[in-house]
Image 1: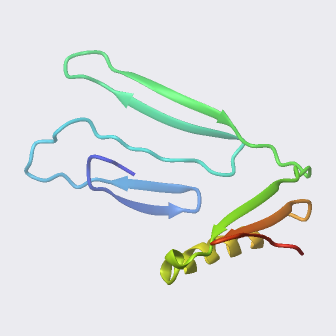
Image 2: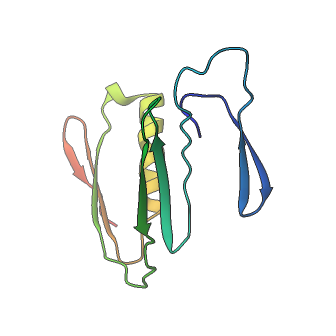
Amino acid sequence: YSPNYPITIERTAEDRATAVYTASDDQPAGDFDLYWGVADEAIGLDLLSYKPAGEDGFFVLLAAPGVAATDEVVARDIVVVLDVSGSMRGPKMEQAVDAVRYIVENLNAEDRFNLITFSTGVSLWES
């Protein structure tokens, strides 16, 4: 990804890519910034560099350790508070219901979940 120049990414192999910038007649407006990420590796690397005209440049290399997989899952307490009043009719309610459905579908076995709805009164969902 380049935030300041149009590029295309050509995947040459599963673990290899080429970033292509095609120069035009216009003078480049500044440094070419290129960002990339590394996934599922033991170490994640990000490199940013800068070189002012006529000066020495500098760079920063960020190396972050990967996240170690663990079998231990910490139980979560999740309480959703949902407005079911008339003002939520239509698309707003559909979006809220979809969000609750997503939460429920992504619960872990150890998680605890409850739903509180309110309009003119308050109701607690009981399993």
